[in-house]
Image (cartoon, rainbow, N blue to C red; front, top):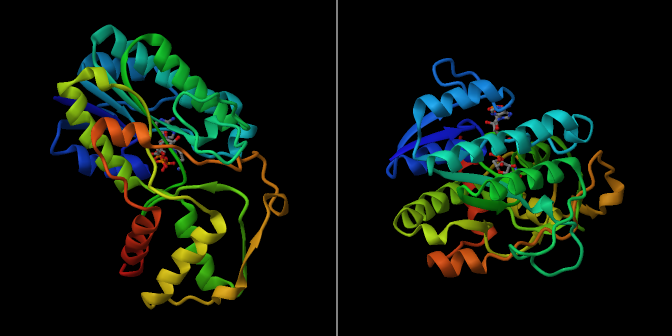
Length: 298
Ligand code: NDP
């Protein structure tokens, strides 16, 4: 099985390189590839890559993920998060290949306290969320074989993420204010990649199981509790933490104005994924603890 991986150096893409290696022949195309152009901003070059490679599976881990910057960089966010997936989907539809794509909790408006299900009404609050939703629509309307995994609060032991930022700030500052009115599940790039590999193997045998799935770690938290959990673990590992636990204080989103509005309720229900594929999703604490230990041993 020949698999084209786009965005191989991002948090999820990096883990996909590892997790997909035993399942398929992985060919990675990033923005800098000369032999295999993988820049989502250049549709012609992207189409040429697809035509020359004729992959059985296209995995798109590339995205415009700068949520606040997207508010003023709308055309680029839409080009990368919507138009490019549309091109991938058109190629997949024409060649009967499978497209695996990632989306976000930000397609929802964050109202209520119930976990969002795959079929629930969407209503993005920001440009990033709207561009990701448009990408989803283009994939579905193309009629191509697809898997769309909606995930949230992604972290890894590399790249830009909240977890790494908190561990750094914990060594620099004596006091930290962290928002406590947004709820969701921190999800490791490792988990996303491992589940992707498992699901890919299953749908290869049974394409009827393709579709949209929510994929997040089990449990719910807010950014403040998440930060305390991570910093506590770092302290235990002997990391040079400066901030005391009681100096990590909760605050509201209103105290931290950002260019893009964030949903308060980012809970995603994973029953469908667990039931269809017989998966157990580990708690968010398990993944965060493991990654903090890895980071502290570096
Ligand atoms: P990262 O920001 O870690 O990585 C994004 C990747 O996209 C990078 O490798 C980057 O390339 C690549 N990229 C950006 N622009 C282009 C372009 N024009 N052409 C080709 N590649 C490009 O993202 P994650 O791994 O965290 O995200 C994976 C998926 O999960 C995305 O679809 C994202 O929307 C979704 N998601 C992420 C969340 C998060 O918290 N991060 C939350 C919910 C969903 P380069 O390495 O060259 O910069």
